[in-house]
Length: 246
Length: 255
Image 1 (cartoon, each protein chain N blue to C red):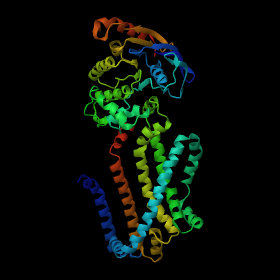
Image 2: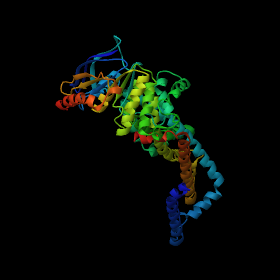
Image 3: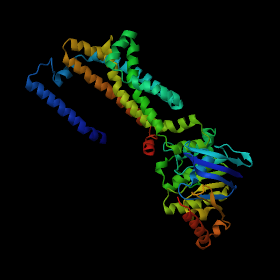
């Protein structure tokens, strides 16, 4: 289990996030939603160890009770943009995390290639990112993140750049992948529909207090969720977000 | 075919310029000692081709040596300045100041200090050509998207890995732009250095031809100098094309 305690993030001595504390369970999707500027992305970046130097943070992160110094092999971070390097092929991009961690190129390639088919990228191993559609690029980015085989995925609005139909397909696709190989996921999103459809738990951040406004578990299995069953939760989330000024 | 079509306007402009020059010389009755016609220059070039080739070969050799050393020096300096901000703050103003020294003043001093050999010429070429490469590399490193850096850092990459895996590929198109600018200076800088004192080279050839009132040979040497520069640019273009198929995609991403 990953535990964040007393996290305060400040910009120009003005607190953005204040005294944030939460647990991140393994094999569960936790979505963070909140108004723009509440510090969702900063929290994710802090956990990943890539908080910009102009933001100052205090707080602790613990993995199974032991202090965690990010970046850490147990965490894989995926920024908002897909950040596939345009000069690398999809296979080379997918190998990047393994190579950075010290794997030899051939070994990394051997590890990555069998995953191209389940990720719907078969035949595109030697394509370049600009030759793929938006959905395929996103799957390639997920492949690069997931092949690192970390216990937790930190995803910053992974579907925000996709059109509505591709987004729906990708949400479903990601849930399937996570069913096959469960991991703890912390996902920042702006989309109430996405949060309620995918998450096992929704954490609502408040821009006003800089902390957590609500922590809502979604216990209904994803496959049983319907518009009607989610309507109440969505209404609650909507009211929480509307109450909180940006 | 499309390349010929692209070059057609500039070829036509050059032909029109040469034709106007030729007609002016024929009609105005200007002395060939003052302004030789393009045909006189071409004739001078042909008659003296062996001697000119010898001098051009020397100039090209010096320019290539100076240019290569300059690129290596600029790259190493750019890496040092990238990794050591204190060095960047302290050294960069000095490097900028080095570019304000007029080459006309420096070339004779170089000969005075280092003699008529290879060293002063190579040093002068380095001084003139290293700065555009250095600045373009610096600009290229600065274009590294923050998201790329974050992605690599989150994977556990240190500064060197971020530099090698992302900053260098991002800087590649900028590097080649700097190389092109420097390449256009390399031949001219060599000629300047030879002009100040040399045993062989287009610079000393131009000086001798001028002293002998052979404007046609001065211009013939100028034509050769321009040709050498174009050859250097062409070689760079081919190198870029041959080695950078995948890197041409960087411009789209960084832009």
